[in-house]
Image 1: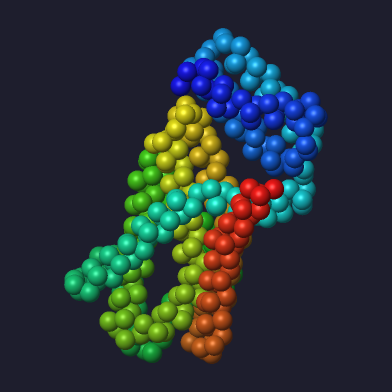
Image 2: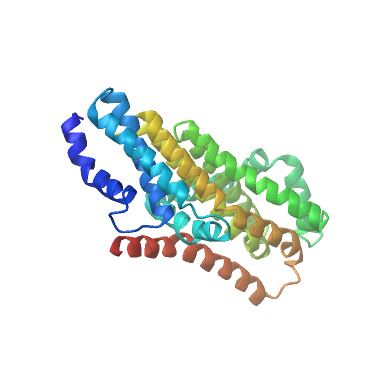
Length: 322
């Protein structure tokens, strides 16, 4: 991009930032100022790479310094900043990365289907995926009339801490493997989706599909959603390397990695919720009334759809109208 085109494309935004720094423009929230500051730094990195020593680079350097002082003079801290992350910042990130969410969900869904079909046509596939020890234990539990007994085999708190940590690690891997140009994330999504499809079809073949669904999906709705969203975060980071657009590859990666980290960090309450349900409620799934199990499953699904799909759309729309 030529220097003149670069200035023409971004000049209006720079003028707005300049007015903000000089206090001549309309006031904006610290979060909005922070977002604009990140974009300005990317513009500065681009100018330093392609137009070193130019007046545009010097201007952007000065403007970035002024913006830095403005942000940290007005930075919001404490509970207000903490709340605004889940109220505004994370939903806007999710809205901006709908395509990555769709890709992640599609890859995972196809993997579930692949796992189920493979189990249907190959009796040994479930042992290959789940391991002989787990399959034999599950068959023995089914023979004893307790197909989901595995969830009651450990202490509640030990199970809660172990499961929560495991969920965090799986989601972190789904995100971190995005460094492998997104393909690493695809592998994590495929592996976990195949395991889920394989296990559910195995339960169907053993005639305990209803029992498994009523147990697994008590926590599975939140847990699987976390994996899919973490996968989207990995795709965002990986695609920032593959498709830098007008930014330098390093500047694009910095933006993508920061967005991905924020998306994964926003899942922490969901990790805790899924671990709590699996440790304290799923173990009693056989004794739970069907209505109670459905209430938990459908309530979890409603929360995921409302917060991670519908609410981001409304936040983005209201921001654009504002």
